[in-house]
Image (cartoon, rainbow, N blue to C red; front, side):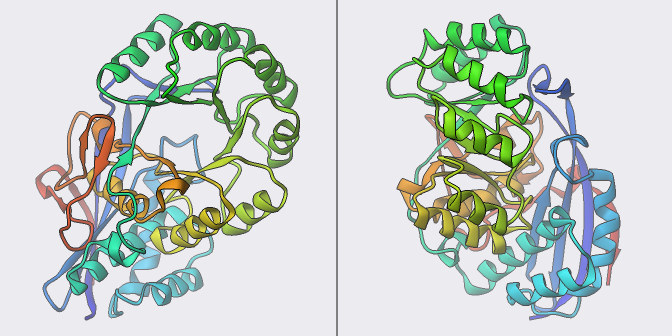
Length: 366
C-alpha cells in the first residue's frame, strides 16, 4: 500500500451554544477545522481532523495548518501509511514542532491501518476495554444563572460528569462554585477548569473557600511550577492540561507527583501514535485521563474515542462528544451518544466518512 495523494479540506464549525467562553476573556462562536484525506493505490482512503480551539488557546493556528501540511505532504506521499512510526519519524525530520498539523496525517494513517487490517482502530490500540465511555459536558463561562441552567440541562440529559469553566474574579468564582455546589449529587464527577488563569495564591484561596465541595481543579495556573506548588498545598485534586505538551512533560509530572489526573488532547501530542504511549504511561502510573481533543467534528471525535475505548476503565476518567457541540456535522458514522455515555461501532478504521459537500477543498498534493 502506498499513498498516492493527500487532500486538505477546511470547514467552519459553529458552536451550538451562545458562545464558548473561558478564562482570560477568550470567547468563540466559530472554529476552523482542517481535514486530511489520504488516497492510496489500493483504493482505500484514510481521514484525519484537527481543530484548534481558537487562535489563543494552544500553540496552533488554524489558518497556518494548510501551510504546515504542504511541507509535510512529501513525507507521506509514496509511503506505506500503515508504518505509522516511520511516518512520524519522517514528519519530524521535515518539520520541527507543529504537532497539531502532524496529528492530522497520523490520524489518517491509523484510519488506513484499520481499514487495511479490517479492524476498528481501538483493536489496534490495545482492544476494546471501555466499550461504554463516560462523557463530560462543558459549562461555558457565563453569568451564574446561565451556568446553573446549563448544568441542570446536562444533568437532565443524563450527563454525570460536568466540567465547569472558571475565570471570573476569584471571589466571583468562589460564589459561583458555592452556588452550584449546593446542586451537586453524590454520583457526579465535577471539574473546575481554570484554563491557567490564576496565580497560585488565588488558586489556594479558592480551594480553601470551597473545601467542602468535591471537585477537581484543572490547570489552575499557567506555569508547571505554579501548578505543582498548588498541588502540594491544595484542598482539591489537581488535573493538568495546558502545562503538559510532550511525553517528557508527562513523565516529569508523574515523578514530581504534580497531578491527580490529566487531559490528553490527541492533536496536541501529535496524533494517536504518541498519544497511545502517553496513555499507557499514565495508566501504568495510576493517573486517570480525560481523553479528548481541543475541538472538531465527527472525525476528530472518532479518533480520540478509539483511544479512549482501548483504555482500561480505571484509567479513563471520561471523554467528550465534541461533534455534538456544533450546529452541523462533517462526517457520518460518528460515535453514538446516549445517557451521558459514548460508544463506537465495529467498523474498520475510525468508522467515519467525511461529508465532502460540507468541506472546502484547500489543496491536493500528489
